[in-house]
Image (cartoon, rainbow, N blue to C red; front, side, top):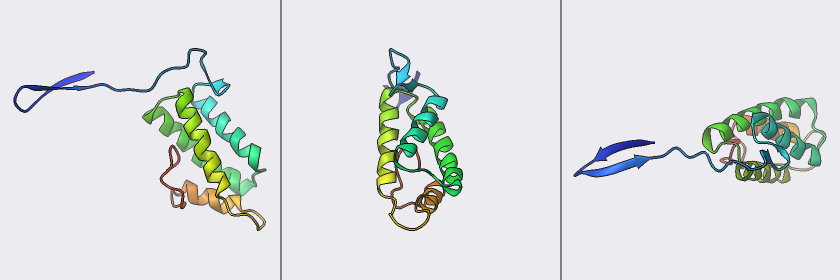
Length: 124
């Protein structure tokens, strides 16, 4: 916590908040940490697609960056896991159907943060 003076004697109090921790130590049945976040996001992808190598490479970048952003922004909480999972599902639902590998190019766009869905926590 930091306390600073602003203007005519008013106090400013800043508190860093990382969200509530899970009492059970689990987030959506995964450990509330970076490895748990990555496992949850990969499981979410695997529920919908069997990603090609191209898609796996791009999604690996997206998921690694997303887990790092979760750690920095909101911490690893059941709420941040649920938001990340729902946003991954939203991204996957918007991948165009058809073609040999529709997920590959879409995942590359998300990795470059140029996907139409951006901005979307924690990916872009």
